[in-house]
Image (tube, rainbow, N blue to C red; front, side):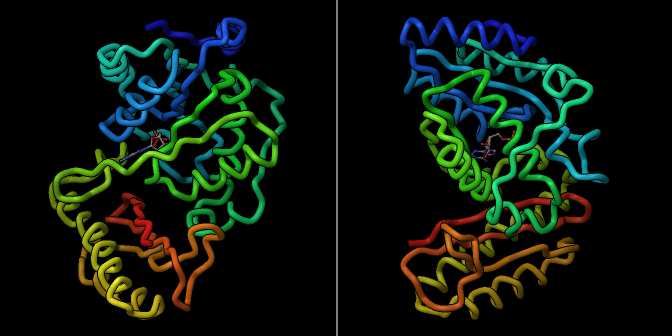
Length: 280
Ligand code: AMP
């Protein structure tokens, strides 16, 4: 595994791979790697000649007052995990090399970016779209792998790929969970024992929401039931959103339809956690 820190060098490497017609699989991450990340990386490795993973805690996707400074970082542990899987390149840029002084260009995917998480994290998806756009230009992957845990992110990146004419296939990958159902997340490291236990209410609520939808309850009733379950957990200190949404537009759904997105964002004390189910 080669570690590349300088964007210009990363670009040279991928340019040469392109000349040799090698297919490139790319997994962008913010590090503190867990099984969720590793499942994407293994898949990228299986499906491409060359695998590139980036680790970059992207400052532009954190709003004022969010957890950028304390976001978990474990570069040495991450390197070991990646070495073990046997990826080809780890791209590990410095913030100043991607956003030098005077940097002034941002990508904004209108509409989708204002829904769900966008309402509570101003500028978040602009930061995400901008960094992914930059990484796509540097790495020029054939396929890019994203986790369904961040469902809204997938929709936004897919829209950016189409609107900006990237020749990249986005591969959505299933959410990897702990045994009790909690979706793996680097932010789970913030939870103490009690909070970690309380966090399972997110999964329980999604399961129950799915069951009720399949039983034929109306989306509005399902939403009410979901909120009731979340409220029953005292350590859920804030429900940012919970309910039944259209999987393409992310608009709240009130009538029955063929496919639904059940989605939740809550705070367990100070830790913000999200999860979702697609229901057919
Ligand atoms: P992050 O480091 O949180 O930016 O995540 C990097 C990529 O890993 C994103 O595409 C996430 O959706 C994906 N990811 C994070 N957690 C999981 C999980 N539990 N299962 C599957 N993919 C995940």
